[in-house]
Amino acid sequence: MTTATFSRRWVRSTTSPFLNGGRWSLLRWLSLVLSCFPLLNQGGMLLFVPLATVSALQNLNKPPSGDATQKKTTFSPPPFALPFFEQFTMTSKKNAKNQKSLLSLLALEDDLLSLIANEGQRLSNSEEISQLIAKLEDQNPTPEPAIAPQIYGRWKLLFTTNTDTSSPIQRNAVNAQKFSIYQDIIVTDNDDSKSNNKVLQVNQVVEFSDTIRLSVDALASTTAYPLPELTERQGTGKILGLNILGVSLVGEEAQPDPMRPNSRIDFVFDQGYFDVFQINKNSNDDDDDDSKTVWFQVPYPVPFRWPVFRDAVKGWIDITYLSDRLRIARGNKGTTFVLQKQQ
Image (cartoon, rainbow, N blue to C red; front, side):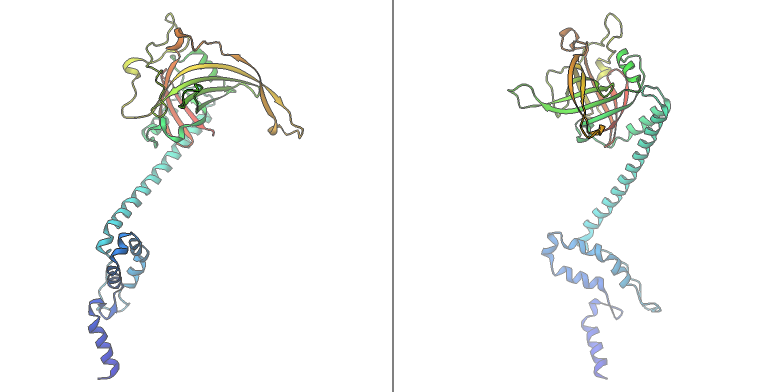
């Protein structure tokens, strides 16, 4: 027996637990190495080793071509890595599902925006638009939308349903397509110097032109910014049986949906005024750089703070769909609104 033959037999006999038909089994070798460092595994560092080497191990453990005696070795992770692989698989499936759901919602949003643009009017009872609204509401991606970060900022009104219960003033203003209507949901400092609490406001803004704007401000309440004085509305709002300020749902019909927690914003209109601006022209003749200042204000002709009107100017909106760019809400007078985020 030659020295070379003896050396090969000695190596094979002394390393038989880690040989696979005469070839090194990298999977068994890796398992041996990993078992020598159990403390590192507790830190989570070695859990990433199998992921990086799965493909290589599966290829290297395949028998050489033409070797009929070699059995194919399949990969199975070491016992310590099983929880990681199970979590990784579950997370991957969940991320794929979420990505598919997001793309579906974006497609529905695009369809809704396109339909509204083609409708050509802001005030409508389009059945096709209502169906798309219902589909989006069934897949609302934002839990507790009334207190979600996305709710704050300026929203532009794109569409609202035409109902007999809304006020005539509201219907006429909304139906005037040439006017831009916004809703600002903002948090401000309390005017009371004795209180450090923040105040939530829902302000309605109608831009009649570059120089004339109507602002109707409302104090608002959510669980994030509660307003104790804002109690539940008692009356429908009819005055001598007439719909002047709108007819509201009350009682059982006005209760929030328990399946949609933190979806409602309660509010009470507090003040309104027309702003008339003065345009300050800049010397560079660039209209975009022109600034404007309030020249004078005219009070809105509804005394919101009079006790006799205080209950009638209360209301609420239920946020039924909220994303980074689109919001759908249903109001206390039975109307449905679609708004797009501006800033």
